Image (cartoon, rainbow, N blue to C red):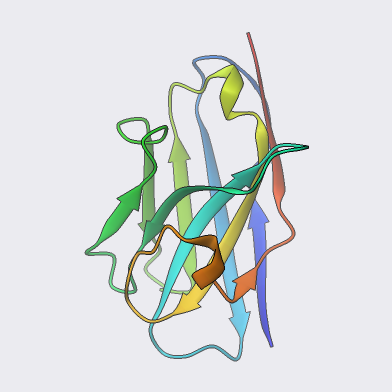
Length: 124
């Protein structure tokens, strides 16, 4: 079983920055992609960003491009999401996800493991 734990959420003013982190533990294949998704009540979970096993390949949603930066930690089982210039519409529960393989997929259905989520609230 794979366990993902997110941290770093909170309430901030528009224009501020936050850094989310996720740590993976348990039985997972040697190479796996990690990503971030977000969801607001009444809407489908949407892709934010993903990073390959070695960190050489990243993928961003249009809404995140240029403002968010995803990176793997030195300990490979961690992933960070640096969110800059936050907007009201970034308010959501952010979920960490992991999938075997090296492709930085933006498809939620391709991810096998999910964290419990961390709330990000942005107000203007």
